[in-house]
Length: 124
Image (cartoon, rainbow, N blue to C red):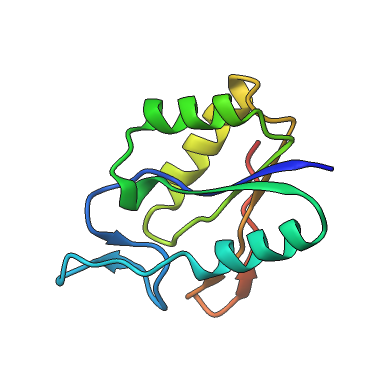
């Protein structure tokens, strides 16, 4: 079975990537990464080993997050992206690939507010 990291990447303090909308929280709170948690439950039910890593909420730096991913030795990293953090999230996913920390990267989809529907993020 596969080892999968479910990642909400590091970003600015109090940014709410996991809420119904993404913004810097006025209440200094954040939502649990529900989509990543649900995916992790499903994967574990199928026998896979998972690491849910909410690096942004945990206050981890890029380097600290890369180290945790390296130590887990995943087969796949699923990166949950936000609308406002998209450039950061894609750049971070590229770092994972460049350092050979995962053979596969999967990026979450989000709704493009321009009205063109779902936007698939592909860079690496």
